[in-house]
Amino acid sequence: MKNSPQTIQLLWKGQCFDFPLVQGSEGETAIDIKTLRQRTGLITLDQGYANTGSCTSSITFMDGERGILRYRGIPIQELARGASFKETAFLLIYGTLPTPGELVRFSEQLTDYSPVHENMRLFFQNFPPNAHPMGILSSMVNSLRSFYPELANADEEIQVTVPRLLSKIRTLAAMSYRISMGYQVVYPRPDLSYCANFLHMMFDSTVKPYELKEEVVQALRTIWILHADHEQNCSTSAVRLVGSARVNLYAAISSGITALWGPLHGGANQAVIDMLEGIRNNGGNVDTFVKRAKDRTDPFRLMGFGHRVYKTYDPRARIMKGVCHRLLQALDREDPLLDIAQELEKTALSDDYFISRNLYPNIDFYTGIAFRAMGIPTNMFPVMFAIGRLPGWIAQWLESIKDPHWKLNRPRQIYVGPGKTMYRPPTKGLDMEQYS
Ligand code: ACO
Image (tube, rainbow, N blue to C red):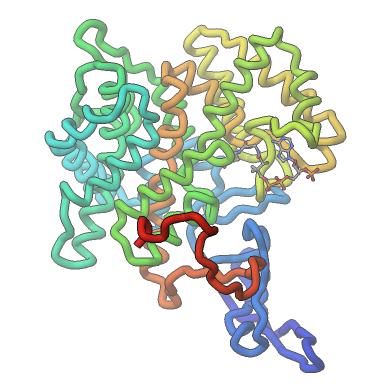
């Protein structure tokens, strides 16, 4: 970040206040209002934070107008083409791609930390059968601190806790699925890659051993790379905000998982499938649903469409569409929901309502179809997103705790409630004794 020689002036009550401008490495410019309240008594009001930068960051660059997404400067398309998920996680967390030696060490750590404490299984068994896997995952990640208490110092804490969490989340996610189905837990295999190991723990069984297909492993690798970070989105902001109170990493990540669960965020992949199934069950007429999405009196929205930052086609959605096609082809499978999704996309993208509002498919529009083809149950879709997003959350948490300008996150508000009102005891006839 560099300070710009220019300033911006605010005229207020006959006085002129100068505020500095700061510039990011890709030319983004911000007004630095750190001293605004102190000097003028004013605050800014920006519901939804659409115009507010909450931090400076060197992890991910995205340009919503031009459809650009880069991790540590590397375009997402290149990582999706050639990198492993492990390398991508390392890149996000530690700032550079790993050397061969670093990659071996990192892989060993992920293997060493993959089993979870046996007592955690008892925990799982006490959730009701219909508990949503996101609720289970967020609780289990939070409870990791009780099973793996704090280490001696901050450096050791980071060196051990980061790979431990990256490794265990995959084991916990697979366990939550298997226990909810009443299946036996499958243990991780040290010889498998990060993505293959997850599929093995999800689907292997003594009755029918799971055949690891390279196309499925590659599709999962791509999906997780595409999800790995997305700068200051809702769940990442939750991780940073909760982390700003200096809670431990597990607690901060658990709050990110909870935020991601919502249908407007990571729960959208599940909501897209529910919507596509709804269209199919109603005879497959996409026009009716597009009409409903445009009706301001109807709360229905096209799930998997629109994005706070992208005002053009989400570059991740473009890659995802190709992944879906290749996966279905490789598995020799057809999915009527893919046809409906494509028709819906075509109809919406030629409709003035969507064009004028820059509403395009986002990443969640096609991921659900790929997860279905892999055999992942619908309620596990947001969990799949959470595993992919974990490296980004960790990187952002690490960056925030090392930030020399770190502050407890504490926004202000404009109060619009009643003015000072005197306390009046409850209405006559009530026996006040019972409240005392
Ligand atoms: N379907 C129909 N209309 C939409 C949609 C949609 N999916 N998304 C936005 N709009 C309309 C709004 O009604 C609004 O119309 P108006 O100007 O007539 O009032 C306009 O487009 C702007 O919408 P906002 O809600 O102000 O945009 P915002 O940036 O706040 O919302 C969001 C972004 C939440 C993602 C929204 O587009 C949405 O709800 N999409 C569906 C859910 C979804 O797919 N979420 C996943 C996002 S990606 C991710 O988190 C991984």
